[in-house]
Image (cartoon, rainbow, N blue to C red; front, top):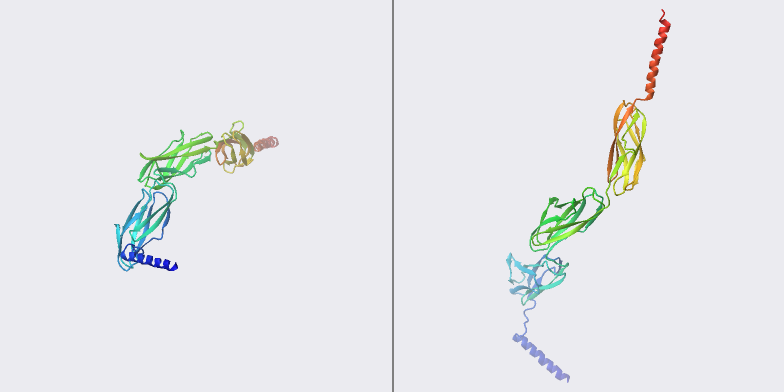
Length: 384
């Protein structure tokens, strides 16, 4: 039995060798050429172009020639084979003299995220498998995005936003920039530091846009929407910013009676009661008081700082005004200021300087002394 199987196997091998010798099985195709590139798997975003530098290596001792094609390329993808500045369809390679081929593959803008496979083929001789990982969902449109769409601040703030405009179309676009802000609000656009109302963006590229939003004076506390749009005749994109006004800030410096005048003697002191009123809709913090005085005058405050003053509330501060000893009689101006990080108020006080009563009495005594002396002289020497 074993001899019979051995005889049949021998006859089968003889038949196979005879067929190969006749030419029915191609044995010379494999290994004659090698296609090599170091980067066979690449991750890209939609719309990018991939450039492969491929080496075609002749492993034989004779010239090898083959047609080069790309097979299995996904739909709507495009490629171009070049070498030496020429578009390439076939290539001939000498032994031990590798040839460089450039393969450019264009990934379309409108494509699904995922893995895509294809191969560069030297027909009948070699193939080079390639993998492209598309890392995000592709779209054939314009995108306007921002990482920080909302901000909060007081009514006197300027709100600085940043947006990115991406042109995912196949052509260069000129976008007009508009904002649908509430009445009285001001919106300014800047690109590369320049104020603009439109911006040009190349195909599949981006532009950063700085957006400054300024609320009107007296704006009420609340939340405000600022829609922004970038548009051409064929494509557009929009996004929305939000500004939250925490309240209005205002402070008023006066006196309980509203009277902004007082008097003081030269070198003397006068206490003046000040009234600090928070007339805004938000609390004020760290209100400091200061004064601008004539030379050699002093003004001190008690307390020196108000830590917190609630909206609609008021408080009193004592200001002590000390006049210069050499001040002559007359009217002087003392400017006082109440300042917080958000608001400031100033008041101008007129201070009348009066001559000291001591000097008045001294003058009277001198006059009386002179009169007494004259009287004494007349009494003593007048009869002679």
